[in-house]
Length: 233
Image 1 (tube, rainbow, N blue to C red):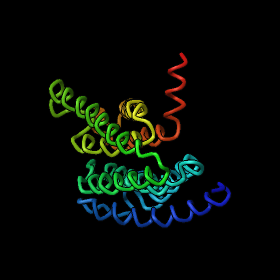
Image 2 (tube, helix red, strand yellow):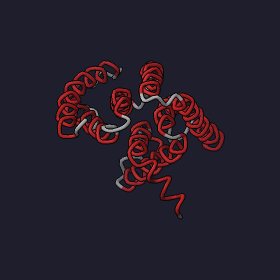
Image 3 (tube, rainbow, N blue to C red):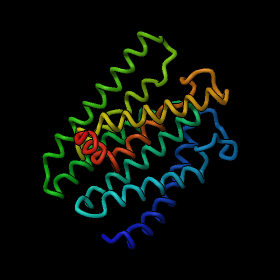
Image 4 (cartoon, rainbow, N blue to C red):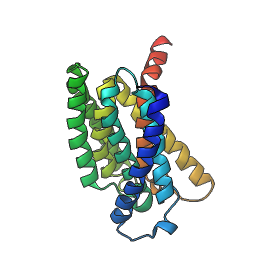
C-alpha cells in the first residue's frame, strides 16, 4: 500500500486507539493518580502521541512485501505503549497485559507468516522469544545475586522479554540481542542523566520497561541494517 494513503489512516486510527489505551493505563494505576497529575510520558495526550508515533514507524517498515504483518506489529506497538505508560506511573508491568500480548501476538504472527507464505517465520519467532528470555532472565538472575533487591529492572521485565523476542525473531532471530542491547543503552543513558540531575540516587529507581520497548521498536526498524553493518566491520 502507498505510504501516502497508509500514513494518514495509521495516524487517525492510532490516535483513536491511543485514547483508549490511556483509559487502560489509568485503570491499571493502582494508586489512582489522576490523569492531570500523571508523570511525564503517561498522560492521555502523551500516550496517544506515542501510539501514533510507533504505528507510523511500523507502517513505514511494513508497507511493502511484509504488509500482512502490519496488523500484528500495530498490536505489538500498542501493547508496548500501554505497558511503558503503566511502568512509568507505578513502576510495574502487569503480567496479564504481557500474557495477552504474547498470546494474541503469537497468534497474529503465525497468521502473518502463513499469509506471506513463509512458515519458517513461526519457528523464528519462537526462537526469538527463547533468546530474549534467556538473555534478560540471565541478566536478572546475575543482578539479583550481585546486587540483591537493588537491581535496575524487575521480574516484569523478564516476563516482557518473550514478547519482544517473538516480534523481533519473526523478522530475524539475529536482531533480538541488538534490540535488547539498544534498550540497555537507552536505559543506561537515562539513568546517568537522572543521577546527574539528582532525580534519583540509583538507576534502579527508573522504570526499565519503556527502554526495552524503545530498543525493540528501534530493532524492528534498524535491526537488520545494524547486523549488516556489524558484519561488514
